[in-house]
Length: 374
Ligand SMILES: C[S@@+](CC[C@H](N)C(=O)[O-])C[C@H]1O[C@@H](n2cnc3c(N)ncnc32)[C@H](O)[C@@H]1O
Image (cartoon, rainbow, N blue to C red; front, top):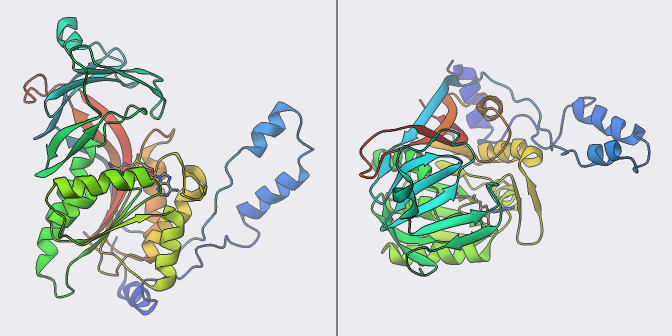
């Protein structure tokens, strides 16, 4: 369903600001009922009460006016093989990946099936992560063939950057995001003739900056926000390596929520927003990020700082126990009255075998929901 002319007019008049107050739940709504319930609960002590007191307390947002966008569900966005990366094989709770010159083995709880390739091929890996199988669990890298340094060169979508063996089993890039980056590059290149000047991209929870560099290379003015000084340092290093030092990228070490609250107050707006929040995180001053508590408010604030003629708004969510419908319906409600379409589903990587060109099984990596103008 597309928005009525009246909805569109109202949105423009409001200067992109929400018609409903985003930070105030409806009076007497569920939030009030939950607060009452908490007041009524007996003093802590028994296990059940402790568990209840640890339940997330979402910052509820009010229902917006206007029609819901059109929808495309379920949508499976598949990355097969980027130039510097492919998934070789998976199985028995592990995945075997090619990152540049290195073959890497990491835990992958979703690979319930048997591997296609033999043990000898798997044993021939350059780096193996052992440890906690949780998405963000700690562990150690083992280098069976030769000791390797912390970083190595990678190139994906013509962007040169560093792969990195981190203690949380991550390698400095989430290659399944290539599906979003390709869409973003096309959208930015198609928008390059617009009168409004260089399109503005906001990359929230931007990590090592590969998405920011893809956007900058495609001609955008980029604002990259991450809470970790270390990650910002890695991202700047990647900017130098990619030869994009002269591009307009603002590297901001801040709490993502605080940053977008400020942007809303200042009236700054963006053509594209990417947000890739972890399940749990902390801002530079200890600000707590809990996806199930803060996501509705975060999306609502993001909508408020999207330009009325925005090019897109992309959310990905990793390692959470939820259906894609939970992020889909949230995005649908967030984007009421904005027209366009919300498409949601999963980001998957398809095995490519040793050569990268022999399609095998699909491995799901995350949920996503994205709003597009059409
Ligand atoms: C999983 S990474 C995002 C991956 C990245 N977008 C990509 O696709 O390559 C999560 C990032 O969120 C950052 N982070 C965690 N809590 C944060 C917060 N409250 N505000 C801003 N960034 C935060 C972390 O420092 C980390 O770099």
